[in-house]
Image 1: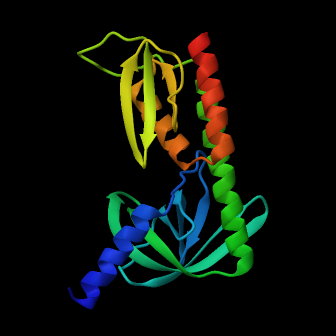
Image 2: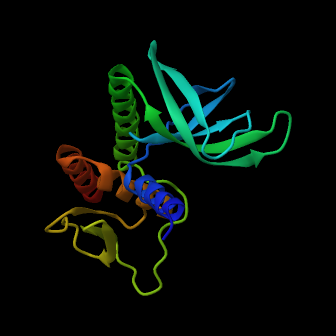
Length: 210
């Protein structure tokens, strides 16, 4: 394997391992001499939608404001593609942070925590009133609950009449949950800490009782 191939493989692994959060409200970002918005964030980089063309491997300055504080870093372009043609043309670009000071590191951690907490609160609230979207399909069972058990980083979901939680990691929810809500709730649980997971289980148990 060449050095270039090894670098590409390492970048791919890093992107998959790093936890990403997606802001629910737009965060304006300054990228080089242009502007755009944050699509998702991780502690190692971000994906942005912006208006200035760039090339893979280029180093660019990127910054945004958060609650009257400024995040700034030098980032390298991992990949960039046209997202939408028009006036102006929009680009979707994945960046990896190369240089950022301690203040920006701390601010980035607070931003990610805030975004993650908002998602967690939103999905816990949804446990009290599931969406009217199509429910999870199952041709073999008409069970009233779905038991979701986390094994390593893989989910095993089964239909059941037992409303109790799995003995290990996971939760049980009403079978009326939609596919999208179930997938998002599982992802939220996967990236939550122990206290947040316990809170999800408590709220799921309340939703099952109701």
